[in-house]
Length: 51
Length: 280
Image (cartoon, rainbow over the protein chains, first blue to last red):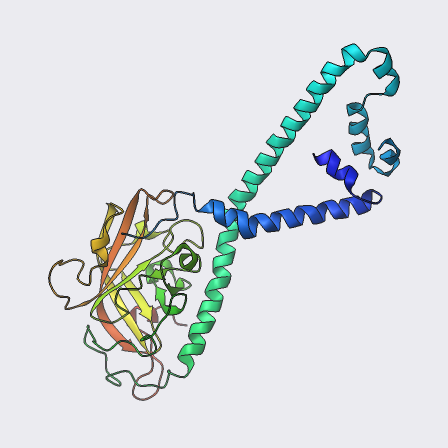
């Protein structure tokens, strides 16, 4: 998958590197904003209230 | 595809060359070459999956242990700004009995808290045992969204200083972990709650852990004398136990022992005695 992405990126390798880093940044942002807060609910130490 | 080779940094081009079968070999030894190539591809794909899972896991660990704390820190700052703004106009408002410490158990809700809504700042919580920088803005509400911003006030419980029970839940791990060090608390330790006009000094009377998750009694207006009408201002702090699991709960009960107006009759600012040591 990663070689395929690398090949699909346009331009010479410095440009490719720039786009690759941009992709990584987008993915990490999506993870931190949506995926991790959702996954976090399954963690066993967030329940602190009594019922 | 192969024409792209010159655009590649050397180390990548080299790897890719090894993956790719040179055309002549494919023609002469196709039979022997196919299998290893499929195997190589499968291994490559499997390696990518492992690598991805590993990196995701590390990112998630970094998110929980570090990033949630950064986010909570930012939220705390804006909550404290909001509170400071809210309290601004009220600084001059004399407390119910001007210039005098109230008897423990003032029945008047502190001004400015009458219509607090979910997500609003309620008060600032200080525990002198944890040092002068320990000051947490308490937010209204106990959903995960609220608790991610700081310790949360159980909406249906009393407000600071009221007769009844001011109950607050807080994280003990991640999201700033306000209640992380609760095991270091001792009986008699002061817990100070700052509102618009007053300092409420509570003193810890009970530390109870581990208790079952279903310890809803801890939120009762009179938690240490269940079934009887409340006569005192109590505070209950709840968190999880053990720290990195939520199989039990950790409860800290305290009782209001002193009420100090933030501004006395003469107009000078004052601190509760237990916080004076932190001045200068």
